[in-house]
Image (cartoon, rainbow, N blue to C red; front, side, top):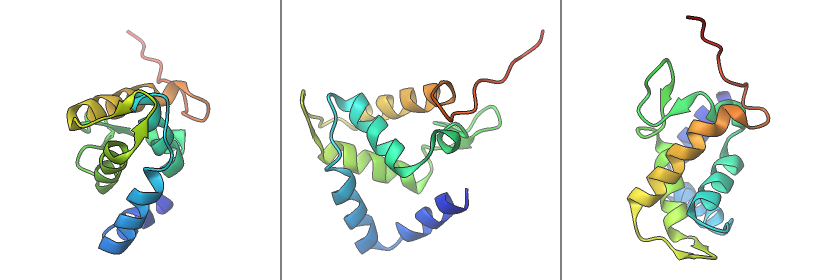
Length: 117
């Protein structure tokens, strides 16, 4: 979490933000969802990604309101994926939402919490 906070502080500097978007937009992927997943994995571990959801419900942090979300969206919209370049922020947001949703299931994600009735 310390590294995440350091990253948030770093991207407040416009020049650093621009450099990061440029670097992340070079990652690529087969489609928008794959590209977003690759970008998120470069920025954060699955353990950290598992602490977020889009709105911040259920004792999780809000990814939509974080500074990192803006970086991911800008990078994904600038990336040319094999299926073409996305021009719709909504499409990228859905891909981010999906990646956040399934992060606990991936290696290092911590797993899902068991609920007992």
